[in-house]
Structure formats: structure tokens, C-alpha cells
Image (cartoon, rainbow, N blue to C red; front, side, top):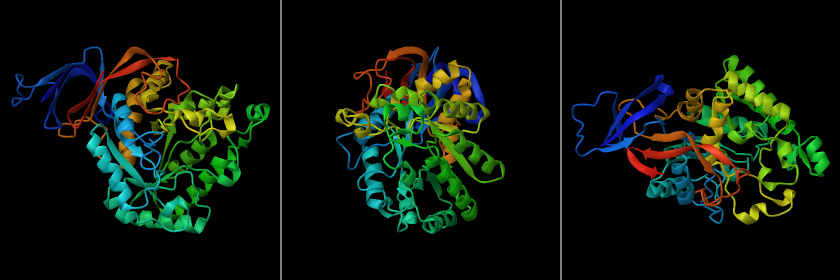
Amino acid sequence: MIKITNGRLIDPANDLDTITDLYIDQGVVTAIGSQPAEFDDTTATTIDASGKIVCPGLIDLSVHLREPGYTHKATIASETNAAASAGITTVVCPPTSKPVIDSTAVAELIQDHAKACGKSKVLPVGALSIGLRGEQLAPMAALSSSGCIAFSNARATIENSQALLRCLEYAATHDFLVIFNPQDNNLVGNGVLHEGSTSTNMGLSGIPEAAETIEVARSLILIEQSGVRAHFGQLSCERSISMITQARNKGLPVTVDVAIQHFFFTDENARGFNSMFHLQPPLRSQLDRAGLLNALVTGDIQAICSDHQPHEEAAKHAPFAATEAGISGLETLLPLGLQLVEQGLINLPQLIEKLTCAPAKILNIAAGSLTVGECADITIFDENCSWLVDQETLVSAGKNSPLIGSELKGRVTHTLLAGNLVYRL
């Protein structure tokens, strides 16, 4: 039994924002407010959350765990431990492991390792095609039965539209969610930075916005034709959001998430050849960043994720074009989100919604709320606690963050997974 007292409980799924107590027993929320008669104070653990926020455990829609295949970068153990320290109780991992998640054996291996670690729930995304090669349909029904929450071909574009349509039609038949990371790799080419004045001045190959927007347009047409339930993950261009919003307003079942770093950085941050700003998709222009922020304010972006991509030190120590793309972002997801609140773009309940019940709704899972009787995945954080981002404070095996050396506000103090305390500051 656990009693969390005097915290500001924010649960957007139930429209709650109040200072109150919360009671947990046998892994579920048993009461909010008044203490239930069967609750035994003498044996219960009490957590004083005075001055802190109590909310549902965060759900991150894109976390590259690197295992299996890339354990020199990170492991399921290291990254679920980092997730717990960041208040993230559910992580969704893309199918980009080695081997890719195109067999039940790989899907079950990942989940078994995660359960053994006991720090965070891991929901694997199955490959849409065998080996992500875009040629043969992956065994989606079997993968779904083995715990895959959705299907995706990641950024390995299925160039053959007929092959993609067949995949979507099969997914639609079984009501499987398909996640799109839209990218025309023929337009990407050898590009490493957004195509614009910055890439030109730096002498780097550029990635045009069309590499994303063309693929968004094709995908929307095929989504409409197939009737599949679809989500667009980690978009970088304002025009992409605009097209998807128009489609959704016409009744298409599509949702969107954006990685938190795209609200804060642009291609100009890469001046000086700082490889920490080498991302995929790339950081875009100031106009795109402004468009993404506007879409966040208007509600056209349903969820925010970290798009966590941990790397070993050597992966970022090379000339910019030769470095590997990605940011280690689990532990800075919430603090950067709180900066959006501080800037007045969204309020705190809206931020928590985009990190909890909105991702849960996209995935169609029973999570992201503090409903009585539901699983007690809970995050407690101090929104005013400042901390220095450095090699020592980052729990993730990946230290590849452009925020190293920065002081951020917002620190998780407790994380509970199914009523078990898995992290305490």
C-alpha cells in the first residue's frame, strides 16, 4: 500500500487538477481524496508530494533502445533505467533493432528483457515489411499476438506504392495502427542538414522539406484508400502538419507527434559543426519551428515524444557529415516541455496530456490516467527543481545531448510502475 499526500494531482484524462491525496494498493489506484476504509495506514508507505506535481506515468512514443544489435550504444536495461528516472513508465520502441522486429522471437526477447529489468513497460513496434526492405509483408498478426503495439517501416521508405497499399490494407483489416516516419530517401540522398542557407554556408549536403512532405502526401492518399488507423511520428515541417490537419478535419483517422527538440532548435544551431545537432529528421528552419509551435498551440499536434537515440561517444566524434544522427532525449523530455509551459505556449495540464493520455489514446492502450481501478503508473516531479545536464547526471548510456552543460528546471522525484517505486531521486 502506498499513500501519496498533498501533491498537485493533474490527470487530464479525468479533467483533474487539484491538491489531494492518492491511494495505491496491489498495483492499482484505489482512491483519490478520501482514504478508503480498507487502507491500512500502519503498513502503508507514505510519499509526501507537497509542492510537487503528481500525474500519470509519461508515455514516450519513440525510444530507440538499441538492443538487440547495438548494445555498444545502449541496452534495454540502461535505457529503461533512464526512462524511470525521467518519469516515463511506458516506452514505444521502433523496429530498427538488429535483427529488426519482424519476428515473434525478437518482439518477445525485447519484452522479456524489459520485464526482467522492471523499470518501464516496453511496447515494441513491429516491422511493416520483412527486414524493413519494403518487399514482403511482415507477419503482422503473429507480431501483434506477441505484443507489438503498432507497425512501421521506420524511415526505410516503401517506395513501391502498391506494396505499401497492400500492407496498409492488411493492417486495416485487423485494425492495426501503422506509424509513418515519412521520408523520401531518394530526396534525402547524402543530406545531413536541412537544405537552406545554413547547409549551403557550411558546405553540407541538404535535406529538402520535400523529402518529408512528398511522403506525407503519398501516405495520406493511401491511408484514405485503405482506411487504416495511422499515426505520423516525429515530423519536422510545418507543411506536413498542415496537410495532416486538413486530412483529419475531413475525417481521416490520423494523428501526429513531434519530437521535443524540434520546438527548440533549428538548423542554425548546427553552425560551428556541432554534431549534437545532427538529427534525422533534420532540424528545420526558423519558419518551420514557428509553424510547429503554432500547431502545438492550436492542438494540431496531439503528442510530444523524445525520439531518444542514444549513441556511443565515438559516433559523434567525427566531421559533421560522418557522424551518426540523433539525440539522447529521455531525461530532457519533461524539462524542455516545462519550458513550453513557462513560455506560455501551453499550460501544464496540456503538456501532461500530450505526454500521457494523448499517446495512450493514439496507441489504444489502458494507460495515461489515474482512474480508480487502473494500473498505478505514476510520476511525481518538482517543476521548480533545477539541475545541470552533464555526463554524470544523465542516466542513459547515450550522452549525446546538445544540452550538456545547460541548467534545466523540472526534476522527477518518484516514479511508480504498477504501484512499485522504481525510481526515487
